[in-house]
Length: 120
Length: 120
Image (tube, rainbow over all chains, first blue to last red; front, side):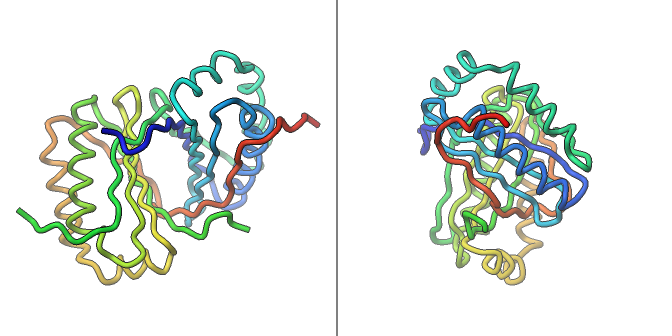
């Protein structure tokens, strides 16, 4: 039923402007390179920045839920969390997490281009 | 500098459980089909649902910012907004928007798989 067997984690922050937005992306990209990108099944981390400078989404794509769970179980979670805390403390501005509940996602539906569906 | 010339809108809701999550995806997929997917430059809408049943992200991909702006200027925004309100009112549970500021995004950086970058 799913159009996409992949598994995602979504990291979502509000920030106080373009400079902080840029700094957050740079810092979190480095965290991916140091702590995440070499684990099996890692596909990508894509940093989405809002055009008004107030928000950053990092969408991390794994080949499967199993790969993500293996990463969580075998990686240095404490070290990674400490690196994230240090990254946030090193920002010149403010960033606030907007995550709620489990940050893990599947894509259950995709709507591609097509004709207008008539109203019922 | 951007790895991706695309343009995105991100629709972000908290919901009160798996049933509402499923209903929200179905309702918003129908809105894409009736109001959005036939405009030039529309690429896809991908519905991400959290594994704990509390959240839905719809990430709508446009070929360019120009295509998105043309869609906003030439489409029936009032009709679409009314359809979104009706969809939310038709849910059996509760959904709360988590968008803040402009919901439009660019992807400024992507980190692919690679070797572990050593710490400094």
